[in-house]
Length: 366
Image (cartoon, rainbow, N blue to C red; front, side, top):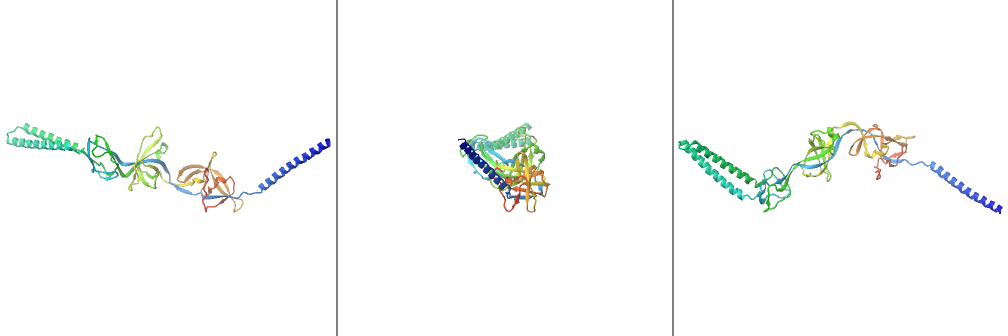
């Protein structure tokens, strides 16, 4: 019995030993195979670092407002007799827009003019009698005073009559009529809007830290979110007070709108142009790799052979942004070659193959 048990234990030991030996042999062979594998170079695109003339600017969002824009309101109450415009008409200064019923004022004006005529006749008669010596000087003065009072009455009624005629205060485009013929309107009733679209103003705000960079007449460029409209202008006003809640400074610019494509209230992208700066290093934003340790750029270095190229991860200090490029304050020098795309598979010291015939797109999340 003991002999059989010894044989069984021996066989079990041989089996276990064989399994352990096979596993060790397999792992060793796999490790030997992998150690002999050389990963192929990673294809990347590159760019030579050069100094450029930097065109700095202040980016902001703004709102378009008409240089001249008002809500037109009635100056006198009454029934609307005529509406002399339709929506989006171009009107000129002084053009009649709305006529309020003025029959009562017309009658009052006729009566006032008649009274003025009587007063002038009486004043002439009194002057003639005074010259003949048959009338006192006080009679002439009284007649002249009556004439002036009658003339003032005519002017007063004429003013009331003019208030019934609503005219355009300036050239512009008029909006949708807010009243109808036959409607009774009170004083101050808005009947339309009038906008001068030939010139537009743009209101925007910048952080208080950039307030010192602003000045009157500094050029600005505006662009719309919808369409491809853009226009140039200049700053015409800077609010001298910083908003204590937002810590922003309000700025107003003026731009030409000869085409009429810009409308009041429209959302705009604003760029304030600042003086250009020479000898600035700027790289594509796609070349920047950001992590918890900071921002870095992969610089291409020469490998052990003439054909071999490797990359070195260099940490940099970044500055301002302008379009698709970003300023590098520290970490790069002109003449170095950097990786601009394809760095998602790179590690420090890894081999690369530069191929600038195509532009590699970074995957989402890179």
